[in-house]
Image (cartoon, rainbow over all chains, first blue to last red; front, side, top):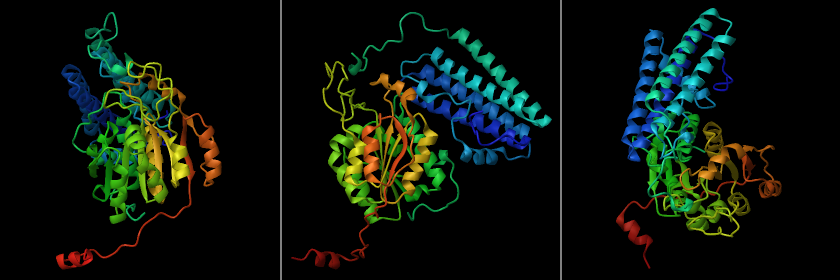
Length: 175
Length: 278
């Protein structure tokens, strides 16, 4: 567990806040990528990142609903101040490129979902509290579902065949 | 530093403006922006008491992407604007941002004298060793063997060494950071703002479009193996002999910052005329 390494999950409330924070961070990151693709005149990829952001946003809302009266947003903000690395489900910003395709974007998403799966599995495995174990296992199961979903999406967006994506007006310094 | 006082906590996202950054996907500057907002949040800076001044170039767009006051200035002159602002308004936290072309070439002279004057502000240079905005010309920090269509056979020139120059010129805090480690970078930036005097942080920030080779930096950077020193001679030896990928705070000086005494403002036209009377 590298994310929030100095901060063990010690209660269900905290676990909910961590789960909420993970989803909110993923939304922010996909939104940045969507904006970036829109600016670079790649509306298809911008829409794909927006769809991913919306999906993560729905997960965040589901966690808020599950938390009931507990204010997970405030707890998540507190956790944010302890954060020492990207959240597990944040796509890696430096993996993006202006020539990327939906396949590349989904590879980023797949890696992010797998990190989230590993994170919650690790919490479930290491927790002493049966309640935390159970809820973390549920989150891990949900993340496993997301991994499957990305695999299904990849069937619709297979790896581009042939040469790497080509720019008809490439950066001159690489010529 | 009076502007750095505990305030009602802002989240890093609260410092972001609504303007979508115009940077290439994968650009290191996205992470630098994240580091700025995290550092500001860590220090509890009020956006209205914080100013981001920048020059010209890809990285200098950053002043538009925070909710702090911003000044997107003239090429190479960001430090002059920042210094003037800090002298006139010492209550503000002033952060100046540049790229390697803006800061070390066009603004090279301002860099020397800003270090020498030691005004209490932070100077961040996002170094990608290329002029990205104008499509890939070599900058002062470009390696001599940068062999491209624009520089056939390489430049053959020794790169500028900004950290050594900063130390020799009198900067009071010197650090190197890596954009791909935004949380660590945020901590360095926060320390740099806290430290009195002129703080200089060079952030290695890859240009994935014109310098795709810089993606390798992720595997080259490493934590500086020694604690920061306040001895300029020791710092000089370390900086001169490191591999350029040492990350961390390398020098913390003890010089008192320059801050001229505040004089009362001229309040009337008659006062102003009298001041300029021959």
